[in-house]
Length: 185
Image 1 (cartoon, rainbow, N blue to C red):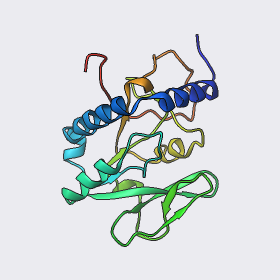
Image 2: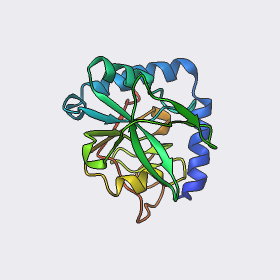
Image 3: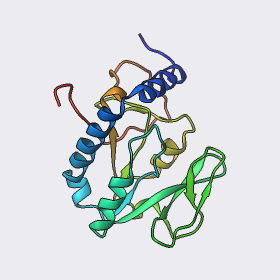
Image 4: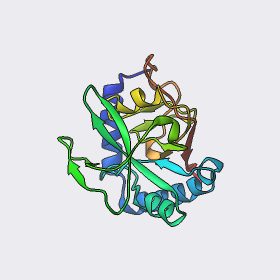
């Protein structure tokens, strides 16, 4: 049985809201550790990630680890027409809160898609093959259509979906790799 992406998005957001703190912290720690062991991470000099929101996997350990390893972190800034760009994150970054309640850099160097080595792509639900349901704006699908670098998503166990749970649409862009924990971890 397939559901609409809107229905599934609401269901997976509800699952994320119900995720208990101990499970969340355990899985975040394991997933970030797995990320740091990936060849895509080890070879990346410029890494794109988000400034996470409360429901999302906490990206601050990723940002701190990257900075400790002298890697450049870039974070998204939204543009008109559901477009976005990635801007350097550093000690001089100034932020503004968007209408979505998201912090975005107000200043800093903008990196072109070809300058990003790795993009950590957020989402609400993921399949092991790399299909994803995002938060509904289409920003990442639009950006991924012009990005040829490596993409990885980190998925809480509660975000893992079966391959046939939804129909992909022509604009949906899968990620290269989804890191997740098996039920036994």
